[in-house]
Amino acid sequence: MKELSVIQKTYDCIKWYVPIIERLPKIHKFTLGDRIINQLYDLLEGLIKAKYAKNKLPQLESLNTQLDILRYQTRMLLDFNKMSVERYEYAIKLIDEIGIELGGWIKKQRDREQ
Image 1: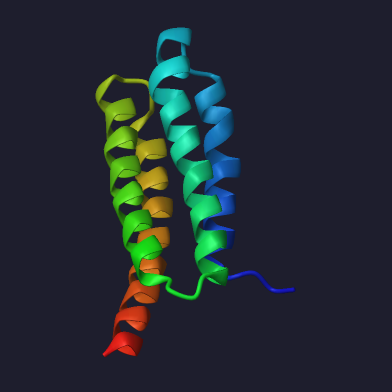
Image 2: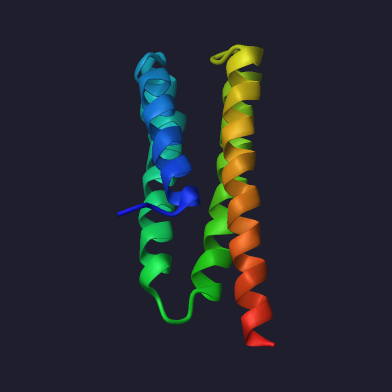
């Protein structure tokens, strides 16, 4: 079965992000790192649940907020010098791609409700 692109991109983002978080110093790994990883897993879980939900829009809008939080958390890694600029740019590119697809899904749901 072919998966929704936004779900696959989120899955791939987790696969890319987890090894980076695992290499953080303990003080950041068990605070900011855990929050980022939990946010990513929650995002994946939420997308899968939304895929099967009858009323998708509230769930998708909540996931959009989670994605924005993830952007700020990622920026904190950069600001704390725990991520290179190149990795930060790549991470934000991944997050933005997820956001574009999520935004498209939200727009589609809003159009259906009108």
